[in-house]
Image (cartoon, rainbow, N blue to C red; front, side, top):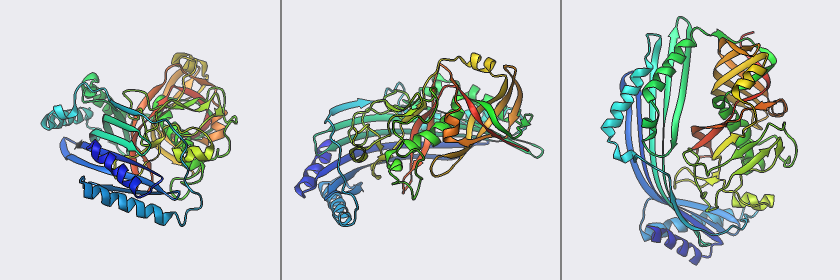
Length: 471
């Protein structure tokens, strides 16, 4: 199969392309959904194919195929070539690729229990059992367990001599409880997952977690609705911070968005042209790092064969770098930093987050709460509302607590925070010592949409924002 990928490159070069790469991939996917004691969905899918990208006269062409014969490969190359050649007549700026080192390497995710070694029947039984634990009392009207397991065997080759094989395995579950009492309806959910195998569901007590999520949903029925308050002091937990980092730091750090190339679909960014400028306090440091084992965004080489490293997006409030492809790196006159990924071989790679998280500070959680005389602890992400430039944002939370004289007091529901990116960044005055990276399995980008798995999070941080609640 590797030879077939190499032959696609050879054939592309014979046609006179400037550059070519290919991703030959074999996928195994399984999805199980259980709700209110019943299996709603149980699917196993296998597929394999190749995606071929060529550069002709400064324009890209791409084609994928599942016809893994030499004739099928040639037809895919021919189609990609024709697309690139036709596009080259209309592009305003020819593509140039920043130079990179070539690598020949093979690596894999650390797996203790292969998901295919656990019978599908056992998984079905476990998931029904876990979902049952959500129903802690009659207030729970709906429980949900949504499980996904994925294995990918990917070989990347290009016309410059790079050959990379990556055996990846990832799995996650979403656990959600919905409660109702009278006119009040509340919900609580959590995602558990990693790059690895089925062992995560033995390492963690899923039955206990399911019960706790059910109890959370019930406790919110008794919580007080939060009242609107401008410029309130807020402490954000890592789960809530994960969504804020994802939406107002991660996506705006994608170089294609910075260049305005996502304007028609996913927006632009307010900090275009601000590299090297101070955009927040010294407590604002954010990384994008795909090299962390066990995270959903783990990889050592991207889908252009560029070796991955930790990217310092923001350092002590200064905007330092963006996520780059080889194409955008050439435009920014910088080095590529392994920001390109595609969900499968059917799609062309895009600049994507990997594990994007807020860096650690020097406070403990206890010190942060005790030091806050009046404020709010905001817990667990819910829904975002962000403008196209990622400037104005409102993000709701699953729960919160009032902080009075350094102690957690009133339990709160129906809470959301609102601010502008620069105003909030300049208000952050503390971050705790320990950062947590959470699994985010559905980061959307592109047209057609590619819902990719990433990691986001950070420590507890403190800043100021408007509390959005009842008047």
